[in-house]
Image (cartoon, rainbow, N blue to C red; front, side, top):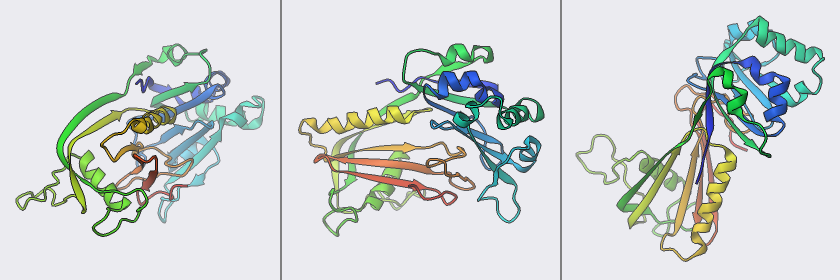
Length: 302
């Protein structure tokens, strides 16, 4: 199935995302997403546009003061506030182009502190009109497709799971937490044999376990929209329409480590890990588990 396209724009002025034309063409006519590229959320200025029309800026202290916009201190700043979060509602902003608020924001990004970023952009439109390629053609926009890698592992030792035993049961089923650790090892292509001469990892599959003759792993990397992840999840659920030997399948989604937001509009911090992800486990009886995880510098998921 198709997972793209998404777009890359180099040196795009932030002002372009608050213009009346952009908001009317994309933000109001579907779900529009944008994220700064090659920026570190703990060191640089970062920006994200959410599908609800909120523009979230994570700014260092100097940039924040130069823009003159109203924001709040980052909750991960420590004793001395060196980072600020600014949230701009584009829907509200565009409702009155003559308002003092719109003029102030426009002046801040266009004249007071012109900011430029490399952006990843994506748009899930409700109609067929409009094109990001033509709209941003003056900035050398590039169309990109997510990278898809498929691999097969033979004789893989897997944990035994039972959909009704989320906490697991000794000698009967592994817990959801044990599965989560095991998935991380599989995704990282870690050796699970716990061999005494392996100085990289002594991890082994939790018990009880069973050897699966063949397991398939598909990895999709890119700026992937939630709408397309939902389609993929529906496809995985239909995998069990006909009887299968596999007891379960899983879908893991990992967010960008340097995104200024993680869940909804919650602030995302990095420092050490930068994790924010979720994982679906779909069982052949149509039960499912949903696991959500974040790093230490994040609010808990909703």
